[in-house]
Amino acid sequence: MRTVTIDAARRMALGAQGFNAPRPEGRVDVRHFRRVMGQIGLVQLDSVNVCVRTHYMPFYSRLGPYDAGKLDRFLNDPGEHFEYWAHEAAVLPADRYHLWRWKMDEMRPWRRAQALIDAHPGLLEGVLEQVAVSGPLTVSDLDAPSHRNEAWWGYGPGKVALEVLFAEGKVAALRTGNFMRLYDLPARMIPEVHLDADPLPKEAAYRALLAEATRHFGIGTTHDIADYFRLHLPTARPVLEQMADDGDIERVSVPGWRGPVYADPDATRPRAISGATLLSPFDPMLWYRERTERLFDFRYRIEIYVPEDKRVHGYYVLPFMLDGAFVARVDLKADRKSGTLMVRSAFIEAGQDALHVATELAAELHRFATWLGLTSISVARRGDLAGELRRHI
View 1 (cartoon, rainbow, N blue to C red):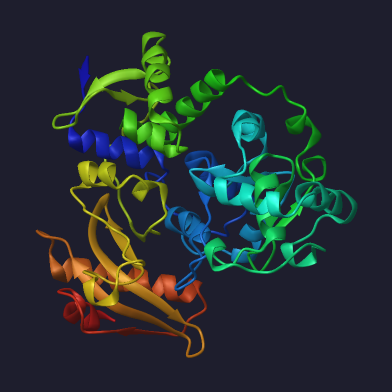
View 2 (view 1 turned 135 degrees about the vertical axis):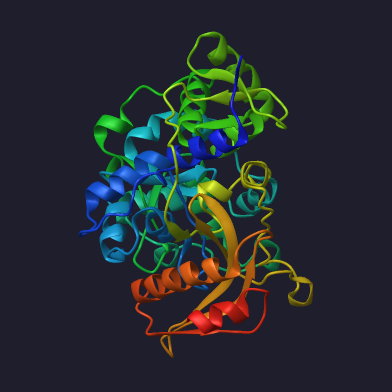
């Protein structure tokens, strides 16, 4: 069995995610977006918009500044993409639709949803009929019960019905310009060639998805790879073992990692990773926190849901990666009214040179602010990098 050093594993992981390529110098277009989507496989969605919505960030981190309107058109093109529960809510290439039919077939209303459906006979059928007649539509377009209940996180029966139908694959969805889901029948959103593709049996779909996850990660443990698409670990484990027996993936060892560890046989191992970028908390490089800590000796926790007085680094903290290492983290907020990128805290990682990191981070923050259409940067005094960063900003 081949042994892969931590340094080599790190470079393999970064190369698989597209960080070995320099940012484009010219105009970024759809070809670049497709390349990134091919490298990461899906883009996680999240409603938090403190700085910028998270689905814009993986493209920025790999490509640098680009026209966000072009990305909106790319991700919301039903000929190219669809949304589903893969990892979390995510946008995926349309040609992967058949890989998720098994999950749609298995989905059933969750307990509280079933209780609400039972309380409104004919709700699912009525909502599905409205989508068929009037789609595409948003939840606000529904002629359905709309009372809200705190136990439903503000979801009314119409919204719950749409979510159940979406999970079961009976309706499809993409996002509107204001980030609302736009629902329609799959036949009107998924290209016929993908919609009519034979759905794979669950084990075959697992095999295909785990192969993709291994390619996107480059190298990882069973837990790492299964988490990429949030696949059931006990089901994934024997599939990965069989794939290794068949030679589709390679068993390797990494010092300090608990096995088994698998690698993509075609993964590149860049000689070096260079460049500076900010990453979203929801970037695939940070999804599985244990893997991030193993690879980079970087412990990251998102603190949005932590009470303010208990936060260590801040509310919406973006890691700063420099030459393939996580060297700092900044709590950012875009104050669009004043046109200011607010750096509410800045912390350096142990062992890093503050002057060098602050110089590179300041340059990256200027790029980032300009991309967001902000004209100034303010740096608060919180954090052990804040003083040096203030001098450079």
